[in-house]
Image 1 (tube, rainbow, N blue to C red):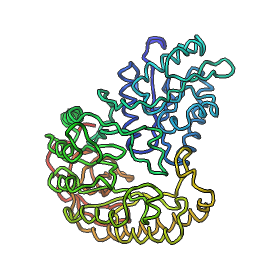
Image 2: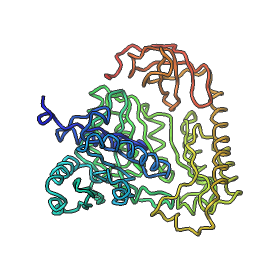
Image 3: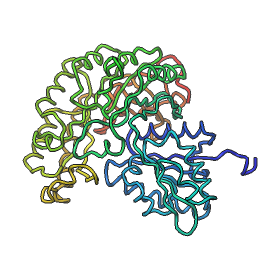
Image 4: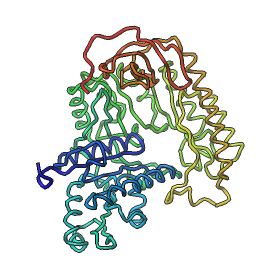
Length: 473
């Protein structure tokens, strides 16, 4: 096949959260539907898209470094298209094009549906110049210096875009992400998400259920429902608890998870569904963010420490064996040492099985950045608080996991372990287990005794092999 006649090849490289991973699969599906061949390395591609996160400054710096590396490919292949998509692209916009003149395209999360058409316009523009593209409404054009063709910025937010009717190109395996919601109606003062993804947009319940049924028919046995505040989902008369129950009852689906919920929408109705439906896993990620009421008010989280502990009690009363995880931010502007100590005390009271810990990262455009300069915590102090929080969180996790040594758990084999002859799996309670096994059984379920723990993960021994075929990989 000649270069001219072969299909265009595209490579998508994703950074960030589960929603970004799902968006990467969505872009691959859209590109494949538009005639592109998806390849595994940037060296093979005609189009390289770097799918980005904007939650923290460190993530953006990492992406900018990676895009600069990719420019090395462009020096040898001037026709290579480099695009930056996702939340960071939406946040930085044309500023990114100015700072990285080798980038051809920046595209926010609401532009993916038109990705093949946008790339075609970019290719035409290389022959026509920017004037040939200016007529396309909604696309900002920046003239690339030295006559190498235009750059495109596709940054409009669309309140009607929930990606209804589009198919993802999912990675092979037993598990799948199922986005049910995009955007967020909350305005937490530290968070950039509402400004780069827009307000909450929910998909139709019938389409979600049809997608889950299709996944089950392909051999997927575990699905994770995704949304920025996933449990606030509502579509016509279908609430999130109702949707969760229906998904859990789809034939062939053995495990259902969801992330990330907002504590305010953890209701008795939701907990009832979790406790009653066998397919719903005994794990809940509950992002607390802080353990002090004043800090929570300044974050605009709309709950108190007592109400949050009440939610935890509600969940544990209905599901005593549930594993809880959380997100915690330290050094939010204005946080005193005493308030930080309150967060440590909260962690000791709540006893989360796992905690994702961060120090506050200022995101331009969020309300927290407009707080008085004297409120911002010194960088060294912020790092010290983070280190102390990590010690407390890991100590609690280690104590909990040490107490679970000897349990026998159902494990879904997800991949290979680090050592030859080992496989890695996850329990229903979201605990990672490594044990001796055949990599050909990825997608199968088994029962494994938890023999020992490193504090965060387990090493185990398979005690009962389930008869049945693994999921196709």
